[in-house]
Image 1 (cartoon, rainbow, N blue to C red):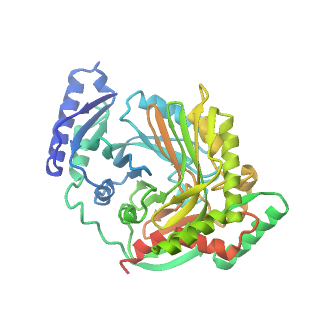
Image 2: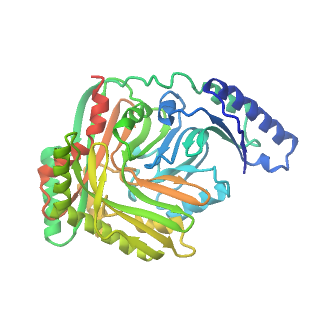
Image 3: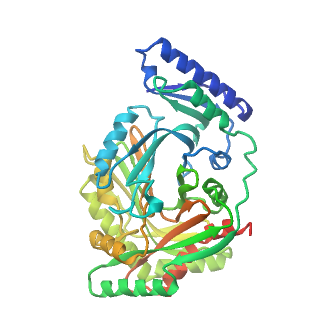
Length: 462
């Protein structure tokens, strides 16, 4: 792998022409020097004036698109096209996926594959999720990256395999103008809830019965609200509009083709690994925020003092401690929860940090942590079986790990607060943790609060 980085910063009006010049030079060099390392994989990276990756992506028309934005805004990438795609068959272990990715990434810190896994073993049983597969990771052909060092436009290519005409034709279809003119969204024609309110109350009552019988301590049940629009809806435009309402969240979009995309804004990290250092966390227990300071403080106190929410949180914390204890030489888990305050929601939060034992792989971490009791339940195997039995839809990639894999680091978020875009419809997913003391109507309202940002941005045009 060779990374070619320019030091001069280019304006948006210059970047396409400069990148085309560099692509031509790289391809010509590869033909002249067949034995050169440049013949394998080249990344051309140009510093550009800082722009919003969300806004840039919303203007592109490429079939394959992705966006990943870290919760701490330390790395945001908008990618178009797929130079390379890594998939797996149903039943493949995460270890196999990670091994393939590591082999292809090599040791270049600038290369990252982006993608995710399905929630469970039957995640592709529904037609809407079939093209995502049990797992799917891509290396974009073009990327707009913003990080602490600046803003960069990059092209990944294999000169030995690439057609200059195809690469440059894709480059010329990209848009670098009008970044502050995000398109309008179509209006909502209808909404269908699965299950509806009566069905939801029945599901929660069933879960409470299982908890009372000590089959489970906790079960996370999800709802799907499907919105039908009066025209096709663009996932990147929805995500760009959600951005100002969802600070301190991961933002993600994974579009496998035009009109089929998975997108969302999640507060929850599954894990981040840098060399042997691992970070995870517990997020369980939710209240809305208020613009009135006194009312907001009342909501915060209510959450912190809630015996039901604290018990739900403790179940997740205990499980993550148990799972990571086997993989870590040292492990620190917050003993008491604190508040994580987002733009419109607040959660109980506990931090987790550890040092992995030598030889522990990302595959082992993934198999140990997913699904956490925050999105599945406890005990995990029983909870997942009950989810498949009770929920009237296939989760697909909802509540599953989604993130990136690099040379020495990996990060995955839990894909909650998310939606599947299919042409003129969007199915929005969100869930609630059911424990002893849960009230069906309260859990219904909690989920309504979790999807309110999506409803707000899509209803603004009606």
